Image (cartoon, rainbow, N blue to C red; front, side):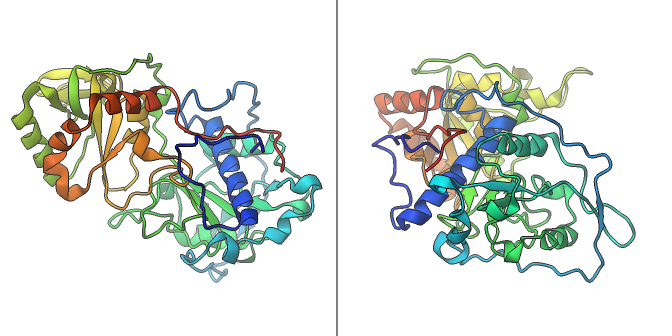
Length: 407
């Protein structure tokens, strides 16, 4: 991140109790994480706060003829994530001083295919999103091919979607990395953590001291000043060109668009709509669409069919409720549409919350106050609402990463 980067003076201080040297490394960590997200399109909902990625070349990492590594059943498994880790306790800053001007360097492990004793792959093929993320980092000035000069290490093991992983065996594969050392200075990316029935809010793969850039952290699993909370990617808004809308009143004061909500939440929303009529719109999955119409891009209210995510632009406030997972892709859709998110998800760590002042662009409502959400929103002055709309539609106080930056 360029030294000339300036944060909005109204934004929060960045990790005020962290020592300066550790803070610098955290800022750079943030830059590298952000760089990867921009490259994969995962940061679509702040389209004007980042530099264009059109000049970045994306070269596919070949998955053919990669070395095969067999993991015996008794291969070592790392300890579970150390929740006590902070930059000054688990991050080795002394690995980061071997380069001119203290420029932090990142090493990406070569791609390998890990299989168990029976020859069954430990995980699925590397995803396009993770491939592009690695390519963006390797094309930047942060990257080094010399493992002895690296400050951060990124595995080529795709952990974005826990559903595609064999948890124990994936942990064994991590432990095989040449510089693993309990995960020290290793950066892992995960978008969809947990699995049924509990849906943990952080990656279940044992990772010891490794840093985690994850979607869906809770206050119980997030290590402040060490992990990085990232948005959950939504292909729905990423693939649709939504026109910008200026601040001001919209057709609906409050809108809910999520499907498969908990029945208790659905009842609360139905009661809310009954009280406030056409000012509130509660949408659900469409059940009577014609064949060939993609259901994911439609929402329904009774017999009315709405295009999604376009309908979000017709609302002033949009509800973002927790689902099976705490982090929800609808947050990306809502922000991309310029609707003010109303976040009803207790303990959720919002994306990049250490550097973004979410109070300027969203409203957080405790789950127990959900029945009163409409009156809470009505109490917000119109001028403040329009300011929040501007923050979402144009820019939030987000640092701009420089690909050639150095400290």
